[in-house]
Each structure stands twice: as C-alpha cells, then as structure tokens.
Amino acid sequence: MLRVGVVVTAIGLICTLVAIAPLVIPSLEMSGLWWFLSMLTGVGIALVLVGLVRSARSRRGTRVT
Image (cartoon, rainbow, N blue to C red):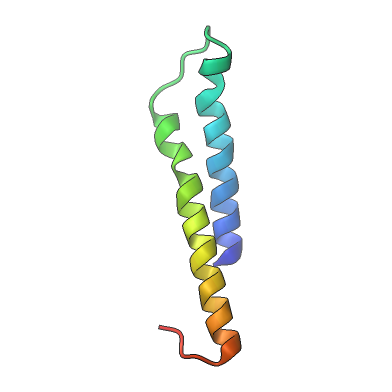
C-alpha cells in the first residue's frame, strides 16, 4: 500500500505542476480536468498514511482489520 500511495502522490504532484502552469505562463490554456487530477496528491498521501498505520500495527502484533 505504501508503494501505491507514493506512486499516486507522485502522479498527483506532476498533475499539479501541469495545472498551475497557466498561472506562470498566461498564454497556456488547460482544461479543468488537470485541477481534478491534481487532487490525486491527497489521495496518495492518505494511502501512504493508511499503509504506515497497517504496517505499524502488524509489527506490534495487533490484529489489522
């Protein structure tokens, strides 16, 4: 789950850079889809956090649900 979260976060960060490019280069016009795809950053961070919690619980011997 950690690796998937890192990949999703990286994709989200790249989409964020593409989405904010028109703010730096005013002649560019991008669709609103890039703003939606940039939200993958938060999804990826959430996956990483869930993966860390599951990993910590499994190391402690606590049952993971």
